[in-house]
Amino acid sequence: MEPGDAGPSSSNGRNITARHRTSIISLQENNTGDSGKPSSLHSSKYPAEVASAKEENAHSGDEQQPARLQRKLRGRQMGMIAIGGTIGTGLFIGSGTTLSEAGPAGSLVAFVVMGSMVYFVCTSLGEMSTFMPTSDPFNHFGTRFLDPSLGFALGWTYWYSWMLTVGSELVACGMVVQYWLPHVTGVIWSLITVAVIFVFNAISVRGYGEAEFWMSALKVLTVIVFFVVGILTVTGVAGGDYIGGRNWHVEGAPFRDHIVGVLKACIVAAFSFQGTEIVGITVGECENPRRDVPRVIRSVFWRILLFYVSSILIIGLVIPNTDKNLANAGGASDVAISPFTMVFEKAGARWAADLMNAIVLVTVLSAGNSGLYACTRVMWVLAKEGKAPRLFRRVTRKGVPIWCLLFTAFCSTVVFCVSLAGNQKVYVFLINLSGLSGIICWLGISLCHWRFRRAYVAQGHDPSHLPYRAAFFPFGPIYAFSLLAIIMVGQGYSTIWPTFDASGFVSTYLAIPLFLLFWLTWKYVKKTEWVRLMDIDLDTGSIIEMECNGDIKVFPPANNPKQSQWKKFLRFISCKKRVV
Image (cartoon, rainbow, N blue to C red; front, top):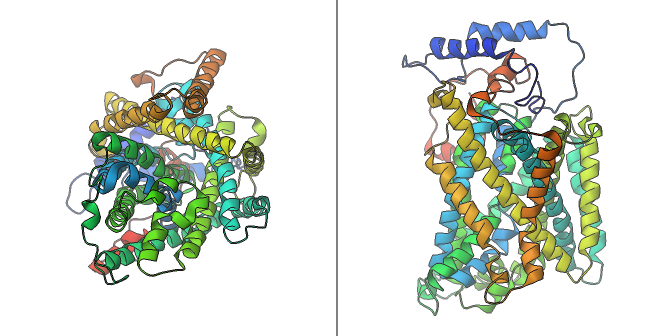
């Protein structure tokens, strides 16, 4: 059974309910750990019913295997993909904007608040994705837990959001390379970029995962080196000037424009965190989702928060918020005035601009690589559920949705060509459209989680039996939904006050009517209805069913010896699997 094959309206969804509920009950009654206490619903120890179901499935006589994705992504790759999807130009270049608008303390507050919101979005996504592994959580969960028309709208909104992002990253790539070769047109480098990321994705999911692992590792290493150099600069060891807390007492510090400045910085920070949810897409091809997804979700927030908060703290200590370059640095072409570049230069590294330009180039490649991957998987699930043309269901022998990949790469290239017009006005317009679309999808995840947990309890299940349980429910999804709604409404305040900017207002909020168009059109055509809690199908496509059917390999529990604190730290950074 493919993750996206069956939804709430699946014809055989209720026929298998009795068998899987029997397995669930057996798991609850028969599974006990060393302490004698019952283990979780989806424990790593499996009863005889699961083994017999797998054997029955293996000898069912169905020799024709349907086209499907391949579960080849490993835990270490998923961990780095989750981090790499977040550490990007928003941190390396755009972080200076938060400092100029909110001051050093205000920018710290903004990133802590938005980081907590990202944490709850990730845990919501992690709980549902571990219970029902799928390559398109937006469409699939929206269809199953809310309304099929909302699932359709969320799926296509997420697809075009990342398709536009890939196109904008192609533009950025040309800008970055022109820093070194100003007399060579950036179009050439952009086309080379789309060819490279296409090859990464066309090889196999493992090829994509390995490429993304090393690019993400380079970004993580850059942040760690930056943190060390920043501390040396603040203390005067590097650069010869003791800074200390001097820049927290200049004009506008520590809180610039007070609460207004913090709110401005929150909007920038929210968009900087986009991409974290890609780990939810990779669940559909995760080798061991029962173990790896909870591990990644539990750790990724702390690593992201560590990298972002430490970076913002160092920038606020080294660079005064009155520096004019901070407000001007916003695009990939502004690497020379990036906060990271400025800190390295204050430490005496005159080659800092070239170093950061190389890092930003890797960042652009990573964002394009991840975006192309996310788009192909989302479109494939949409096609499997009849919400996209049947052509896009086809996959290669390596499990790559090749027609989805070709179509998305073509659309992103067209977006890139269109972005070249209008003196970058079209480019800014597409960036705004893509950013708000991502916020809408995050809103959908929070709402889906609220409904999923309520349905789970209403149908008589104990949340403690979930393979991964999100903390602080129901506060988490409510908190995330509320903050995201504020960001969605308030991000375009500058187009309304002090003067109304019609074109800016449209480009900022266009994603909302587009989402409504997807939603209401599908609802009118298909006459869909809101799914009631007791009608939500919690059996079809669940991890226990997929393990019974042999769609997910069952891994035996590892009995690992105790590890030293140093090895635990290395595992924390790399998200590497333990070795027995």
